[in-house]
Image (cartoon, rainbow, N blue to C red; front, side, top):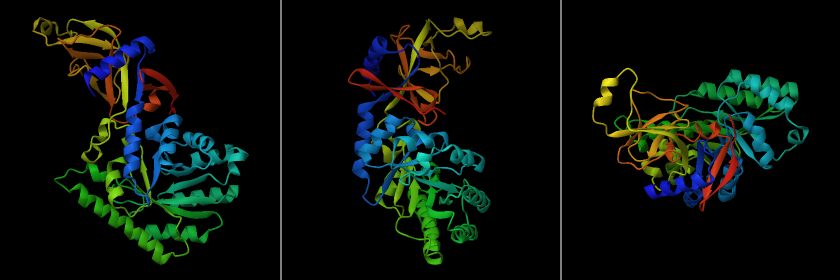
Length: 389
């Protein structure tokens, strides 16, 4: 982003802003990212939007309409009911195994309308036999038939099925209790592909290996349990870092992503270079001092200073200061989530009631911290409610 963009944003915030830290969505950039993603998705890969990364119903609605998908991945159980209430034909895959202690009250408090809504499809993620037995007991108690998606370890080593014996045991249990359990698919998350140091393994090789592991489990399912294998099974994979690789070649039919649509800095990857950051934090400036003064180190105050000290409203977010350029927290003064002190280059023309801007490292860590998302479009701000934690 160019300096004049943030200068204009500052002027618009000074006229229309709240005077408190605001989370800004640049609508034009978000729409550009959606257009790009739509252009790259092959027909055989159905997009699944990750709710925690796009934690606003309006954000999700816009993406759902553009990508023609009501498939969602949910990681936080309270958000499940909100998605069900908003998207009447939602296909929901849980992104992590939910403790039975959380699942039981979910079903007990579910409205009768949602209980009978057979158009909403919930796939519960299962990672081991003991957890599946808990879900089976719940299904028997409540007279339910639960859709079960099995988490497989494709190289991330964060749990899930990691061997044939465990996989077969899960499938046998589903097969044995077919009145209460139904296999809905597999999920293999491959975030490690982009994060492994290249000196250890190239992303391409790591991706191919993860795909081979995935295929191994698919083959076991198809050959040993043909009655559980059918064309409508959900073979979910991905994550934003491997989006492009899945688009080029994938044995999956269901691709989860979300963060890359907002492009926080953790997703500054070569294969996502066509996407741009659409999310910013705007922090109002409360105080501007000629230089930083460190308590107990008065001698430093007599040295030449290259920076002035700026104190902002809030701070210590999972985000990097992006404007004014070369602004940074002071190493010795420390961080603050109340009034963070920022070093700003001395020549920078900045004043009380101006704004500094930060780029989040992750959208999922930032959006739920703010009650509203301020959608910046044509010099104006719309307010979209967020899904809180």
